Length: 201
Ligand code: ATP
Ligand code: MG
Image 1 (cartoon, protein in one colour):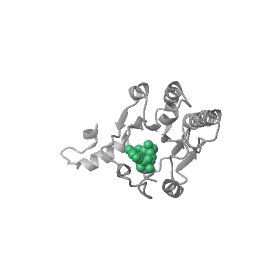
Image 2 (cartoon, helix red, strand yellow; image 1 turned 90 degrees about the vertical axis):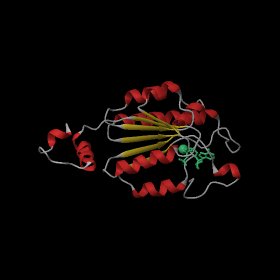
Image 3 (cartoon, helix red, strand yellow; image 1 turned 30 degrees about the horizontal axis):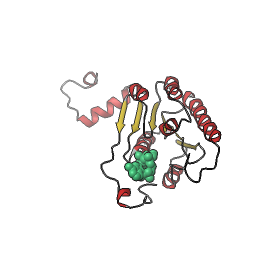
Image 4 (cartoon, protein in one colour; image 1 turned 30 degrees about the vertical axis):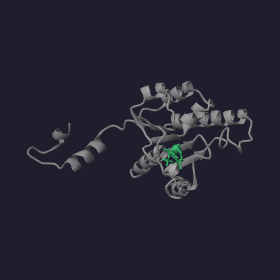
């Protein structure tokens, strides 16, 4: 297809050809999964947001588990408004020492996040939707695998959906187009180095 657009004998650099391909192809949304126990799931999703905003695409980020998201990102996202919208759902850490909320509260928060994400996704107004830590909500039993699959069914074809979190269910991996498993080779935390500002949050 690209060669048809070239003058006979005209040589194009690969970069120019790539740029042309980007402009002429219909946008096609994908389903991406960032999972595994190594670092990089959320930050890779944010890197993709950064890339999309470069083209002026509207992006939505919904955080399912509050507390896993720290402040560096929140400040940067403010600079990316109005293209990027960020919503923090969930009711904080689940099942740890300072979690005094009844489980029903967490379940309701996760269900609300799901319904909200679904409404936004089906609006078709976004080229990229990130559902951060959604698999953690599944692992905790706050939402079901079926709920996630039903979101995939509802995705408009031109919208790319990125799902992050440890423990992506096999059914979702099966349905996704691109799946990356971050594997921990080493993490500074293991030698007692606590989370560092600007790197870990
Ligand atoms: P990041 O937000 O840095 O991309 P992530 O989304 O892959 O990390 P999460 O499971 O969401 O990882 O954990 C978020 C926080 O925990 C971050 O501060 C991250 O640096 C840290 N973290 C990630 N992986 C590990 C690990 N294997 N050991 C200890 N801490 C980790
Ligand atoms: Mg994360």
